Image (cartoon, rainbow, N blue to C red; front, side):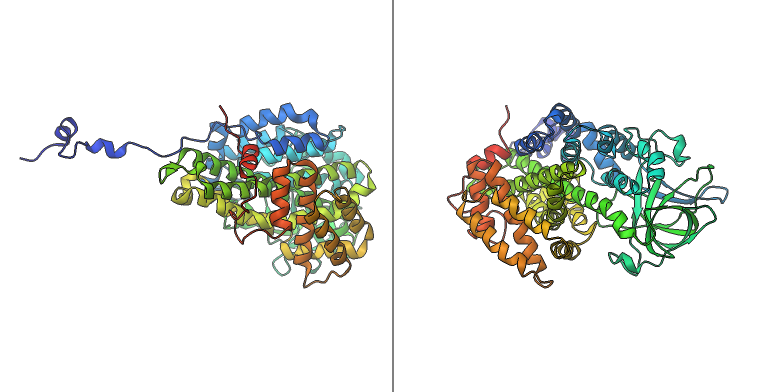
Length: 561
């Protein structure tokens, strides 16, 4: 006689187990959230060191918010429910709007309110730009996509200042902490977001080949644009900085989505890009046809005008890569603490500890460099010429190297979770898809490496600024001294074919210098031994036997009660 399911539950079978017991969950980690995304010793030390210790209390509050279950759910939802393009309304009128999930708006509203968009430009306190970068390192534990419009808004302000009459109108709104979505007259809103339109299909990073034209109108400073941009993110921003060919050459223009009289400017969104990652963020191809624009800076100096915007967004690429490293390291550390294999917790097994410690070194080096770059930016905008020279070269170096390390780092952190990390609901695939973007956005590796060569060739002060920085640790570590001495010779003989090799050496030597100065001996020694001394393999988890693994992990991933 056949047994029913109810019978089986009440009377275990021959092996003494019921069917329900197959659903008992064991040896799986609990949810990570809630956690404190600012619980990072290297981050907090860097915040204080670079002059923004006054922001620590707010940073800790933001860290707890970023790691909350609610905000982590917003991040997942914003990526699951991707933006949708509406070219026309129900009556056939052209509207060119993009609809976002409410979670996107929750995340963006919080980021703007916390000063992660243009707010530092309206803050006179020394360290304001450092505080924003530190906030980005923490809020970067959420969704990367909404960081695009906040980053471009931050970067637009110094470029817009090249046209004071426009800055007078728009800067107070770009530096506002109020997020108001929806297309309306800019002057009628309490806060604005900015985007930029640089690349075109025929040129990409070679913006001097742009074919979008700018024709002067009757009113001074006003032009009409005609052309097609290839990759313009966040098309629902209020205003855009756009490059176009004016009579005197490539120039920069301010393009509002809505004109001062309340009519829609021509900004036809042809399609949204189907991207590898960054799915919560809409990236588009807009077409201009009689689009009204205002000149920013002199005609023919578009690249010079917009380069300050690029410097700012490159810093944010470094910041977001460092944030992604830290986020995936925290995820990996949480998993191995609660997962056992072969009779022991993964975190207690020597090989896994080697992998985690190696990742922790990479993460701390990225964080230290990010905050040093932010400190240089903060001091440069306040008139420090030496820091301006250092920023000019070191930001491109950091953009090249830290963003290059991101994909390999994220892949290794994902592997710490094994098959669990390959499953979408772990969140790790989303992070893995995000990582390559930061190396591509604002110039791929080759573009940044060549930019370093140009900086060295045009302004000898940049090389000297880097060497002066490295001289601060002379005599502290023989491996670092050797690397710095070799770098000095390489700087004089830089060639295009060897540009990547040169920039890699610059980045590693600079990171080593920062860790020797500021990190505990175990961290600095392991970094110099591996990244500069060559006692390392070709993948993460190949630290030498002498490395202070316990001390490194105790700093990066301390056990909490």
